[in-house]
Length: 210
Image (cartoon, rainbow, N blue to C red; front, side, top):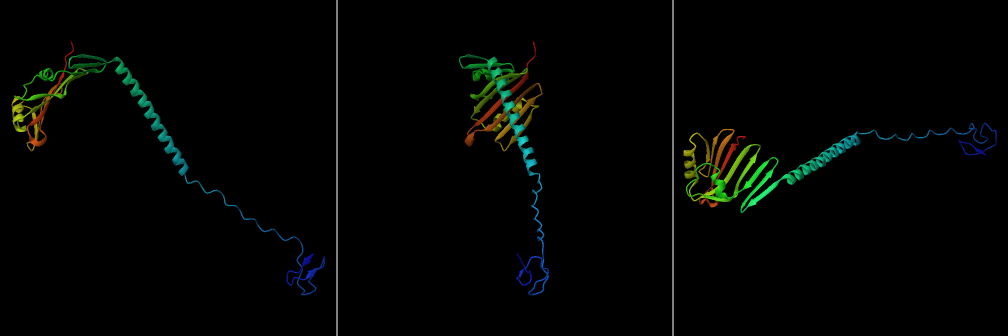
């Protein structure tokens, strides 16, 4: 059954004009309306590629860290396994493939400095040791004195007239003497509260091969 598109009257089959209003009858199947085209996927912004690169870099760094930690652990294990520790009383000596470390009696260590100790100075146990690595022998000793930084600095300045001297506000004095193979450093600073002074002497010498 067909209807007039103009007035809505019923049209007989095959009728070309509406008998009521005279409008031309439209026959046949109406053309299908065009279907909307679905939008395509949004263009890639490249953020996913950047994220992949970042993750790869992070993975490489983590892998290097793991390998480095394992290598250090193996080296440390071998050093610990080959190290020899000997003790006589308060004297402790550790020998490794790279050198030796000794924590001896402070008085004995002070004698190894081979320089005159400031009169009345008291050698301290803390920081007093000897280390030998790759033929370089280092002796370090700490001292305390009731005298001022200036007096102790003047004393060692007279012992090393050609040394380099640095001081600051009468609270610190540093004396460096020697060359690349043999050197002596005296670092002096005022004690906490300004009552007396503390100083450290470090002697570095190259051991001759025998």
